Length: 95
Image 1 (cartoon, rainbow, N blue to C red):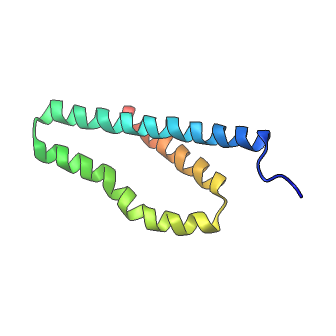
Image 2: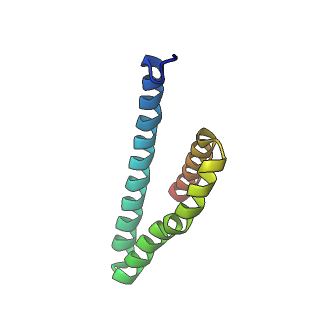
């Protein structure tokens, strides 16, 4: 009987999730900086609330769809595409 988990698969698992950790950390930092900037520039709680809503609304809408798609499509490809799009969007916001 073949081993399900071994040293190589564990290393791959750690690499994947450490990459996801840094990706999520980067996303949260960008969200924090954008909301901080909006607060500094406008000093208006309505704009701050709209910015927070605009951050969480796509996740709220995409989560059920992403769950179905992740069952049908290769998860590594999904992670690669989504993280790449997030990087491009973040880079555009920085510019």
